[in-house]
Length: 316
Image (cartoon, rainbow, N blue to C red; front, side, top):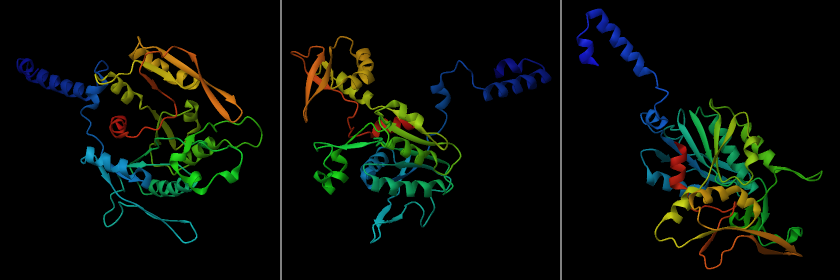
């Protein structure tokens, strides 16, 4: 371009240079988005985490220390049981003001959920640049595992508070008057957090009921992600002997079957169903044949153990 411009007269040369500068400022619509964003440097995140997610925070820092900084927080209680929390990253130097804050949340019971909303409110009022909340498991309703549903006295305090004794439920709707749609309440708490400029990004993995994303509005918006690509990569590996996908119920099949049928079109797909027999649930095969196959069962309520790599990719 410079060699061509050099052959023109002085006025024409200056005009060409100005046009060249202007064209560089504009993004060519045909240019792939990946090449456009490749020039944008990665954001550096200041991480605040609930103790249940501290291990994940440390893994993120270990994976990319130039991109993530973790600030431990003191999650204490007063004698009366109310919260006494001191958030890290503020003393002796305030690293939170003007920063991109990444909050790693775990809402495995109501007590810790309220504690974390105290912190989220405080962070949103600390002049942060952006706020991103990673909530791997959206707790819009919980049912104790392996416990009777009705007798309240059968639930010990440990069973009620341990995250390992709970599974996600479906309390995003009511079927009779008097029931509480807890999903709506939780979404309102997010949506009414103090405004930080851009909407707060709430990253959720494999949301059980996809319509729950529309419960969030105003100051917080849902960002839906999935860990299924991690599983597909494992199934593709030469060491894998799996040759059949099974779903424990119709809901899981509707949610994920297309992802696996596209990647593994020759594999049989098995769909199971649950039949109530008093207090027991009998699982039967409704469709497909797993005979002589190595089967992997895929449910839509499986807890993923390590989301480090996929979280980093989803942050963009």
